[in-house]
Image (cartoon, rainbow, N blue to C red; front, side, top):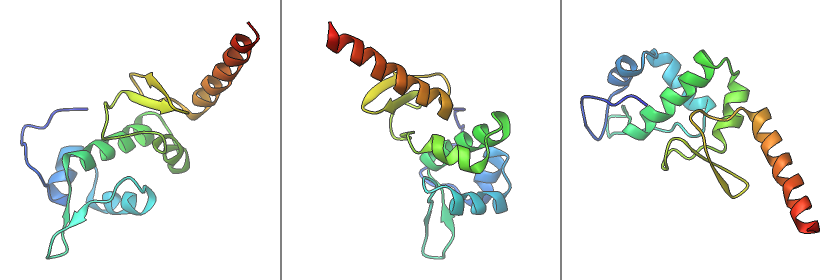
Length: 125
């Protein structure tokens, strides 16, 4: 993820839009679609985005615009992504896997199947 020159606790929707290149109306739409993206609101009702929210937005942007996922596909990928941990670490059924990118859901399923086969083989030895 890119580092931001301005280190603050909270950003407005306009600032986040400029930082990420995503229009404010798209950010508001993504809040409805992705449960991971829930910026707080201040007393005036304005959204206040954190650095974690920006990481989530950039990940969604990469999935949708660069990797070609649909919104439904991106939702499935994000179900197993922990934005509070190392951004390259995924946990698949309790096993940590390092990845330079978010793992494709089909590849994830293949990894789970391979793990089951290996466990079956090891249990017979």
